[in-house]
Length: 100
Length: 477
Image (cartoon, rainbow over all chains, first blue to last red):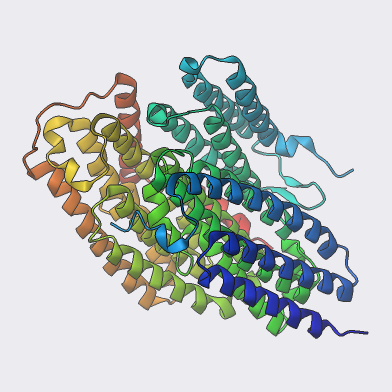
């Protein structure tokens, strides 16, 4: 049987890649994809914990996080479309209108 | 079935009224949309009345997801009050939004509903779902003025930082669940009581706190605040300042005191450091700002630092002080932002230099900004002073003297940048002399808000006793 630590390390790796993607990538579409990666890494560790603790709560929680993440990305893409229509760009560094 | 509808009747009322606004929006001509705000205000009023009638009913329902106690009741009244003031403000602001749709009011009411569920959350699952419910409505509201590129930019930045922060929060919850095998606050408290802090618990605790700093706009997730405060429609900025921050603190209180209270020695230093850094950053960065909404954003980061002092104190005095602070903060924010909306409607500018000589042009707007800003800065005899005094007293009592010193010094810094604005309003000559028209009902509201701030400062006695009694609930075992 695969031990718990393997699942947690995989989840940590995915989480770190996601956070790095959000912080470092220029394109907002890739930033939104990285956010999805973060949520999926969390789902993985939740299910792993639920399995090893023999508890239902974690599995139920995963259903909630999947639903919420979908709603969030739907709104995110809609806002992205509004930004693109207005600014004709999807690059993070060009969105700096309010610095002053 | 473990469902006791009496406990969440106010939430049901707010939901019904939110949908009623949506339905009414389809039937009404676009000129009559202001009455939609009135529907929302009436709905909130009915919910407040129901809460007042049912204020003695307490309990846990919906399978442990939902708790109704006096802390929840206090915050629900606070959120509904905020909602009413914001709906009124939104109705004043309506003409500034092209392509205005009635859903703006509906979303405000839904955000209030999400905050009410947050105040009642008793489990990490319900906390997370209501937190995201609130977040998603606020993302849409922040970028509602689609034709302004600042507003959509603000909405996008808010969404990306918000989703990242909820990722941290959720990852922390995962580890807390792994360490304790439960997501319900009281069960977590039972499991960790008297045990050593394991690695999972420590990681979970840290990530949950970091995730929650987004809602209250404190370090390390404070970067969104200036841009979003400046870019969002002004009523929504006020909503973020008064409502979203209070929602962040009610869940912070529940998580830190109810679930993780028994391991306070392990997190008190962490919270104190966050609090001190937030105080320093917010208040020092507010000084050079030229846009009043952006300046208030930095000031609101500073306020998060003060409120975190109450969390660090983790006592009845500290949490009572948090509630009192949020209450005075609501009145100060409502007054200041209503004045900003009225000023913007007439002048079309949020720049601080546009406010030059305002006292000659509109004494009531100038007086509101005077009282509101000084209350935010914490000048006696206004409400904000008593609130800051209680928070500082709470940390001194718990032996965190260094934090109290930072708090006092930063109160002086806050006085400096707010007084610069007030000097401009009162002592400088205006470029144009035309008076700014303030409608009678706006005047009455501004007088009411200013009087509340004054009364909370001059005669806080009964009110502080009340919040201290409520705060006691959090520490009963």
